Amino acid sequence: MDVVHVKVLILFGLLVASFLVGFIPVKCIYHYRRNLETSTVYRRLLSILSCFAAGVFMATCLLDLLPETIEALEPHIKESKKFEHYPVAQFIMVIGLMLMLTAEQCVIIYQEKRKQISHSNDTVRTEAIKTERNTLISNKDEFRISYSSSGIGTDDSREKKTNDFENSTVTLSVKTSETNSSTLRSILLLVALSLHSIFEGIAVGLQKQTTDVVEVFIGLSIHKVILAFSLGMTLTQSKLSFWAQIRSLLTFALASPIGIVIGLLIVEYGQGTTSSLVEGILQGLACGTFLYVTFFEILQHELSIPDIRLIKTFFLFLGFICMSGLFLIHDHE
Image 1 (spheres, rainbow, N blue to C red):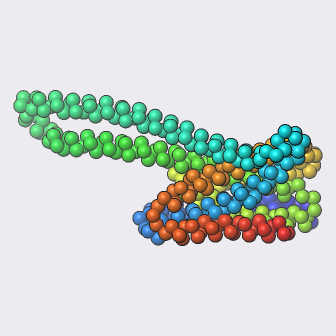
Image 2 (image 1 turned 135 degrees about the vertical axis):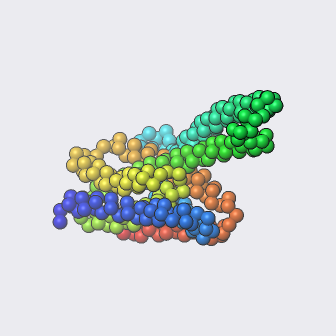
Image 3 (image 1 turned 135 degrees about the horizontal axis):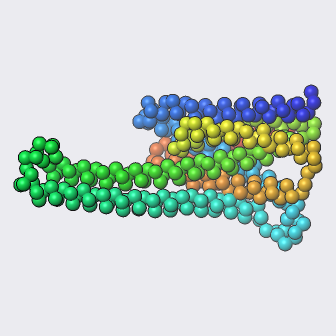
């Protein structure tokens, strides 16, 4: 079979496989969330799988993305001579992490300001309610009969309703802030994973022999399937709607096929040196995104909960070991 035909088959195979595997946790958790949300077993299972996903992301960052970034930037660093002994790849990785941190903090600040404005408006409305209540109380002797027949409650009941209104508004504002922050993290993780998948697809597209294409595909497919499942688990932790999660998975599934097409075009029309520099920078920024999501998003949340800590740590290590084994096998091949 012609190598181009093999690449086209791989393109569709990666698309279907990564989408279906990522769809499994999204569909299952969406379907059973209402029945199992109060279940301790459900929460523990979700935490364990999230820690496994964190281990996968950690290995992908440190054992796959970072070495690829160093390799892509190395020729350009040697040419410049100015940064020959400077850890450029690690610097770009930290910049990626800082960009993630800055973006999230900007969203949180924006949400806090909105919450303050909303709370200020609620205070004005509450004061208006209290003023109206006091007016009613002061005129109760004159309008006792008509107000009694209209069903207005006692002072205590009105006070209770006012307090309930204030509390519910503040709670809603806090939940909205947390929701938007979690959604931002999920979107940025999706961008990082998709970017990484595009470069992996390019690696497939650049192969010129059928046997080389198949070898790269075997390692890539296992890697991508695990990443798809981990992404699905992360999306279920966010507050994205079901269909938004499906669109996110579809975007991730399309990334590798897009990379394969780009690789085919590069083979057809030639390969430039600038593309290697751009690839190295983008890979480094994506590496920082993986670090941020692993340590600031997943592990910070999961390990702060005082439950099954050692089991979570074990599955974190298991996820890391699984991806490490895959990289080791792929290198030997």
